[in-house]
Image 1 (cartoon, chains in turn purple, green):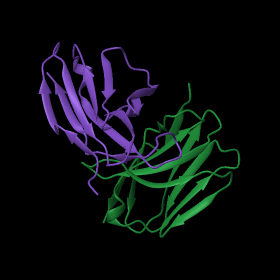
Image 2 (cartoon, each protein chain N blue to C red):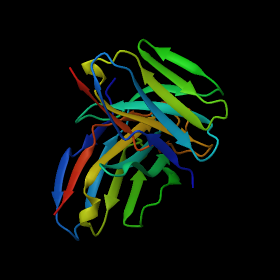
Image 3 (cartoon, rainbow over the protein chains, first blue to last red):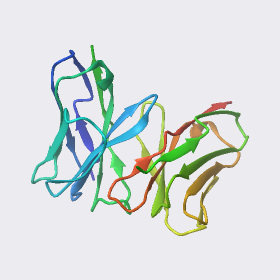
Image 4 (spheres, rainbow over the protein chains, first blue to last red):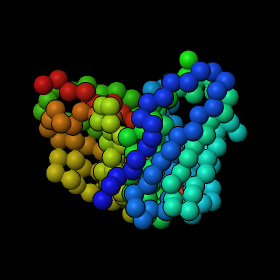
Length: 114
Length: 110
């Protein structure tokens, strides 16, 4: 069974640009969550999608958005990039979502904003 | 909002020594999960605790959930170099999102 796949693995963008990150969950998993990981802040929850609907949202500005497609693949978009958006972005999939199930993480996308 | 605090932030031990990381929540948790992230890797699920006072063991790792379901700990006996990494706890009070602690980074002197 293939794991969670995130693309691209690495990305360099300029301030003010926008970026789209992709996450393909494990086959059969309907929940996809996104996290931002930085050395000082640990893993910060961005949002969770389940069956194409955003079910939970963290405390990030509106520049961060996401969506989920009918095949459960998810994309995350960050507009008007700032230097502080440089981080490892991780997505995690689980079968039904919620907090009672194991989350499987992808390798992450390392975003650098210059 | 819900906060999950984890201490210590860093821990360096000699190989063979024990290691413990602690997780504390500002609110009562429904359950708590533990993850390990190797350097350069991604978090990998270790275990989930659900019941008050629950204790689970995985070889040299012992996980505990407090009686009040507000704290948890992970104890590693006789550390090995393969234990190197960052250990995260993640809890929830019922909402559909996991709140992660800041992690404890474990380094080991062989």
